[in-house]
Image 1 (cartoon, rainbow, N blue to C red):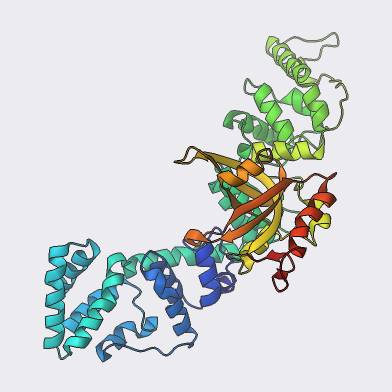
Image 2 (image 1 turned 180 degrees about the vertical axis):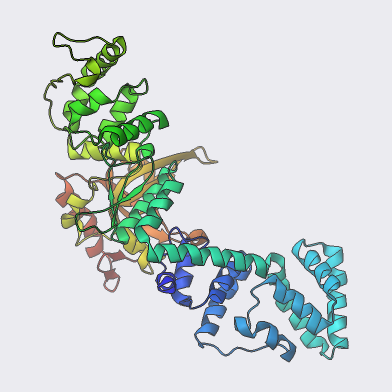
Length: 503
C-alpha cells in the first residue's frame, strides 16, 4: 500500500519525495523496495540527477547493464551499473585502483571540494593504481571520467538510508491514516498559507473534505472529525489558522466548550466569551472566516459588530461587579438577550475573498466552479497542464489571480509574476512588459482571467509565459471565450488539437 502510493506519485507531504520532478520519476520508477527510495534521494540532486533515467531503465530491464571493468560489477550491480552513492566511488577506488580506505577518503575530499592541485595528483595516483591492478590505460582513463562527475556531488549511503526510512515512514502514515496524516501536515504548516493551500488541494484529491473553522468544533489546530457514518474522512480547520486570531481567545473558546458544552446560538456565544482578546479584530476574523456561520449570516454579524462588542463588554462589566437583578439571580447565572439588526446577505464572491485573505484558500466554494460549465469546451484546467506533455505548446486556460509579484527590469520596465488558480490547481504565470502594455488593467488580485500562453518548464517547474489575457465575468464569459477561441480556428490545419495550441 505504501509503495503503491509512491508509484502513483501521490507524495505531497512525504519527506524528500514531494517535488514535481521527484513525483514524475517515482511514477516511472515504480519503486518496490527501500533500496529504490535510497537511490532516488541520492540521485535527485545536481549532477547525479542525469543518471535517473538510466537507473529507471535498468530496473525495468529496458537497457542492458554493462560495466567498464568486471571489478565494477559487484559494486554497481544492485544499482544497475549507475553510481548512486559516494560509498560506491570509494569502493571503486579501493577495488579498481588499489586505494586504502584513507587514500580513498583523500580522493573523496579532492573531488568533492574541487581542489585542483590535489585533484591532478589523485587522478595520476588513481590511473597508476588501476594499471598496476591489471587495467589498461584506456579503461583506467574511462573509469576515472566515469566516477568524476558523480564524485563532485556524491551523497553517502548512510544519509540516503536515513532519508529513505523517513520517506517510507511518512508515506506509510499517509497511505494508512490519510486524514490524520493530512491534519498533522496542515498543523505543521499552520502559519504558511501557501503550503496550507497546496495541502488542502491534496486533501481534495484524496477525497478528504476540509471543513471551514467552527467555534463549536474546531480546536487550536487542524483536527480529524467523524461524519455521521463514523468515518474519519473530514478535517476541520483549526482556529489558530485564522489570521488575526490569537492563542488567548482560542484557548478561552475551547475551555468554555469543555466546561459547559457547545454554544447553543450566537447569543450564548457572546454571553459566555468574556475576555480582553475578544475585540473588533478577532470578532471580525471569526465572522469573515465563517467560524460563526452556523449561528448567523456574515452580513448581519458584521453590520452589528459595534453593538455586539458593546453588549459583550457590558456583560463582562456586570459580571465583574457581582450585581444581582430584581429577582435575586446573579448575573453569572443568566444570559442577556441580544437583538441584531438584519442586514443584506454577503455575496458568495465576497465570502470567498475573505476566506482567501484569512485562511489562505477558498473553503466554501471556488470562484471558478460556477464558470466551469461555460469554459469546459474551450480551456485546459490547470491540473492538466501538469499531467500532460504541454511543454512549448500554446494553451488556453482560466483562473483567478491569487497573488501578484511586480518587479522592475534592468530596462526600467514592469514585469509581473502571477499565481493563477482554478479548482484543480495552481500555476505561475509570467507576464513580460510588452504583454502588460497590451493588457494593463487585468493584472489585479482576485480577478478571473482567461489566458493564452506558452508552457515552459525551466528548472523543471511548469509555468505559463502569457501571450494574451482578458478578464472574465458571468456577464461577458460567452463573448470573451468566443473571441479567444477564434485564435484556434485561425491556426493552420494540423495545428489544432482540442484545447491545445501549438506555436
